[in-house]
Structures are given as structure tokens and as C-alpha cells.
Image (tube, rainbow, N blue to C red; front, side):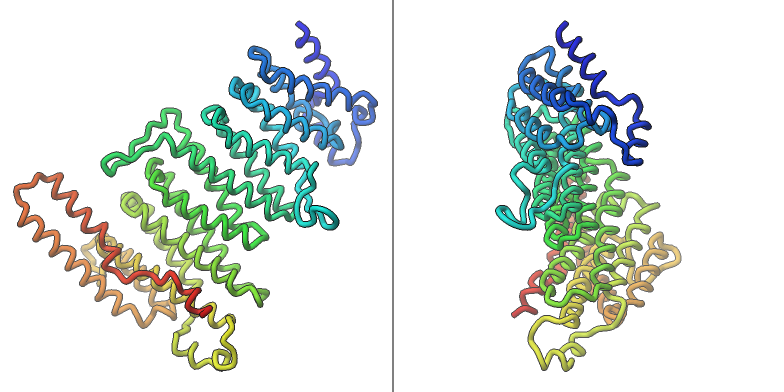
Length: 487
């Protein structure tokens, strides 16, 4: 009875009549009359205190915490703008009652996570001078929002209680870090996304080489792409090189996680195409066009290397699944070739680089060295992918009119032929792929003759293992290219 009366009181004082009127007032710069009311601060702090006291009271805690939505738009007016410090401090105090948070339902979590996003959006400004320079102030609302999320996601008691909508709150925190030019906050938010990735993978297990999903609620399928989108967005749009590198590395590792095969094939295709190839293509194009990279050669080299890995590692890791989408695989492969064409399009050889006057004058990194090393690394990755596709029968050394792969093979060799850096290597690539495929076929045939008594399933497994081991026959990509150039 008491809470019903208080709820009516808070709704009358804090609730927004219509969302449209709130947006209109805010856009026109008008202050709501409630903002200047002397009792509004008492009303806000009163609701926060009630939430702290009631979070452990089962039966009413969800109703009280659900009413927190009245403290910020769109459910509340701009009445609480200027009271961000009070709200963020109250948020931190509420989240410390971990035992009470275990009892929350969707209503309670919705109010709490909405407050997290609001507090994050009202902070994030870096301290420019004085104590704490380069970081966030101790009373910064975004810092309190991060601490609240960090506590929630690291508490063992809440391991199975936190809703997956927390991903949106984490992504909002990363956006605020970018807006406030706080790289530390962006990286901290990415680390929280990685925690969500690890937690979502729990219902997916691997048994006898097969992926078995025990995710009855479909959380992995519905939420995992959102986690990847957050990483991809930071990889593509961040203004900080360190943040982009961190996000690119995390994104690659997350997608090649063994649990990735648990999502539907169409969804996996969208992830590889949109979150890997497209993102890497955008960053490679931006880095190659940028002229303001003097003195940042090492950072640029690292980012280019991570982009190349993002293009090829997820593709080869999930290749067995991707080639099953015959109507879309050609589009995916063509996108990869277009990205590599940006990097390998013009002709730059090692001989040209060694004879360059710049190399004789200085041993320090310069643009020519950066391009040469990156092209060599990208060429090795592309060659490896072509060899694997030829082994699977997806590509052929010579296009045959009667073959299903003739169009894709013709497209591949034509595109590679237009790449100045790889043009002279086509004949060697075709011959190597033909030899590897022939040797692999011979190994499979001999294995079948020696073990003819095996069942059909056993033979299929042997064939698959031979194909899987192809990568060991192909020359390894030189992973230490950056170190060799620096030396």
C-alpha cells in the first residue's frame, strides 16, 4: 500500500507526459518547469535511496527498481539533467547488493540497465589538467557506470542472472569513450564484451569433433552477433589506433572460436561478410590512403597485419560450413578478392624496394617498406587460401566449361591477374595447387586401398583429416614480417 502511494507520487513528479513533448523541449532548449522545482532533487534522491533499501526485499524490489526509468529520458523528462552525480553514485550503491540483484526479473533489470546507459551517456570527459590527468574524474558518471557493469559481470552470484540486454549498455559505454576521447574507457568496454562472449559460449560444447548446442533459449544465436557488432564497430570507427588494434584482435579470436559453428549457416555467412571482410576492407583502404602516418609506422603495420588476419582466419576456419552456401559463397570470395586488390593492386617487388634510394639512405621504416612488407604478408595469405580452395575443388587451375566452379575459377584468376604484386606468380600458384590436390588425392586413394574393410563413415573421416592437414603442406605465412623489417 505504501509503495503504491509513492509510485503515484513519483509518476506525477517525474514521469514524462509524452515522449514527443520531451524531445521537443530538449531540442528547443527549453527547461521543463519541474527542473526548477526546489523539491525535484529530493524526489530523485528519495527514489534512489528507496531502491538501495528495497533491492534485497523480494516481492517489491522489481517494482521499485523498475521505476528507476522515471529518472531519465524517454520515460522521465530532462528533470534529472544536472543530477548525474547523484544518480551515478546511487547506481553504484545499488549494484553492490549482489544478493538482491539475483532476485530481479526483466522489469527490475530493465530499470537498472537503463540507468547504467543514462549515466554512461552523461560522462566520459577526460581530465585535461591537475590530478588524474588523462583519465576520468572519480565522480564521473561514466566511470560509475563502468564500475557497476564490471561488478555485475564479475560476480559469481550473478553468473546466470544478468540479462543479455547488458550488451547494449556495454556498447553505449564504448561510444561514450569515443565521444569523450577516453581510450581507456573504450578498451575497458571491449573487455566487458569479451566477458559476454565467453559467457555466451558456455551452453555450446564440443563432443567427438561435433558442435553440440545446449542453448535452449537461443541466447548464443541471438546475442552473439550483437557482441561481434560491438567489436566490429570499434574496429572500424574508433579514433584511437590502440583501441582499433585491440578490437580487431578480439574480433578475430571471437569469430574463430570453436563455438562459432553453432549458429545457423546463413547467420555465420553474414558475420564473416559484414563483421570481418567489410570491416577489414574499410580499415585497409583508410590506412593506405592516409598520409599522416609519419612516425607511426609500427602501429600502422600492426593494424594492417590484424586486418589481413581478420579477412582470412575466420574464412578458412569456417570454410567447410561456408562452402555449403553455394549461391552466396561466390559473393563472399569476390569480396575478399576486392579487399586484397586494394592492397596488392599496384606492382611493388622486393627487388624494387632493395634498389630504392630511400633504403640506402636510411634503415628506418618508411612508406615503401611498409607497403612492401604488407604486400608480401597479404600475398602469402591469399596464396594459402587459394591452395585450400583448390584442394576442396572449389577452384581449378584451368576453368572447365563443364565444371560448376568454372565461373568462380575464371573470376579468381582474372582478379589475381589484375593485382600487380601477384601477377607474375599465377603460374606457380596454379601448379602448386594442382600438385597439392593430386598428392592429396593419391593419399586418399592409397588409404582406401589399405583399409578397404573400414566402414564408409570411417573412410569419410580419413578423407576429411587429409584435407584438414593441407595447411601444413602449404608454406606458412611469415608472421614475423614486422620484426624482420624493424631489425
